[in-house]
Length: 448
Image (tube, rainbow, N blue to C red):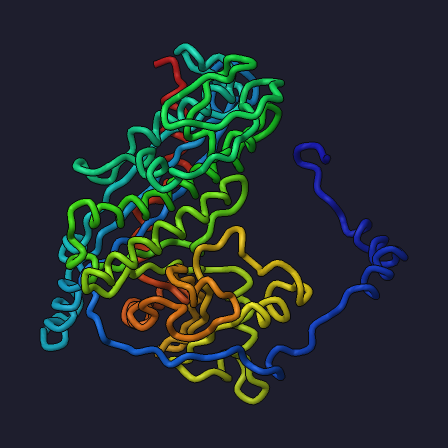
């Protein structure tokens, strides 16, 4: 590791280029032929304009982690902020129609702000060398676990609805797999229950939220950024399920038809909490079937990826030797790669490997070139047998794909490359400016 202010020079790079190990490795690597010369994945022609979505709910989250001053070296904490932004899409369309004939076609910022209603969940997550004053918070990891349990227990996006912990409890009702006791140096395996219990071996308090296993990424000797990120991801996805369950609880499936739910990133749970994927998938499938049974159109949910291997692959597919960047695909093209194509061209696997994303994704990928020429990599939820078959690329495997693509066309923005306005608005509410975030944390830990 260099000293502060010490920077690398080019001498090491020159030696590495001449290193036999580097040359040998380059010779071992199997390199892809030009993607543009190959066949495209399957396409589908979805039914478009069948349902007019009236409202959108976009969910996004952020964390800002910083050193804090509590008298102990290296102490840190993270500010977590989750935003659920409700956008009145029907009213936005009205403003757009008025603007076509108005002398001043662009609506005022105040008019646009009135179209949104934002709910946020915020919490401070303790890191290394931060302990609490209450009983059971005498080590940093215990304090972290206690705070995660407390915040999820009290978090709700609607005053007349269940908390996120109650949502977790409801959708994981049949989970019986034990976890290693979170107590220090305890090898006992325990099964988290609905209410806090104690390990029979060491007496450690075990919370239902421990089943998420975020604490397993907590670090006593370095940053716990991974643990903070896992909490954020879990809270984002639980918030989405929590909101959709509200419509069942209040028997408002008629309203659910006109609402689109948008997640920043894929419909997937990675890391230690990946086991939650199955339960979220099963719950969404149940709610989707219930909506159809009541004469509705089902759940409209899309995960929008701003970056990643599917976006990179779409960019490569849309290159033409004659017309250059984004010159190959026609606007409106919908590409639906099956698992064989994904293994061969996107996430390399042998043909007999376990399907990519089987343990983490509760959605199916599609790639889209919008009518304005922008790119989108989406995941739509797995809610039926067609979607659960990774080799199936029929339209039925992608619930309400036409409505999802209509939204991409309608709400794409050129403010950002391949931008999608609802996510930009959600990020605006969720993002904590780094300087302001660290100021908040500093004030919490100050002596004032």
